[in-house]
Length: 106
Image (cartoon, rainbow, N blue to C red; front, side, top):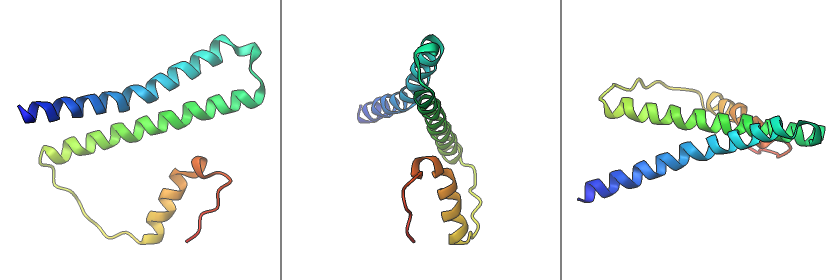
């Protein structure tokens, strides 16, 4: 019974984490389509950035789900050493838009 409760809670969380970005993307794209003439250039840029951010968030979440599924299915992980600078650089590149205008100190 406890296992079923946990499974239900996990499904609910996954469902929420998938639907939230999709709802944001759909609502924002619909607004761009339906209110095209009433949206300023600045607001249009913000709306498009929101769509891109939510799509990236959704892509990362789905990627994580697929990775978890592979691990659970028994796939062997390939481990390799990576220079810390390379790892931090990749993270900063991935978060470039979210960090815009914010200093990052090492």
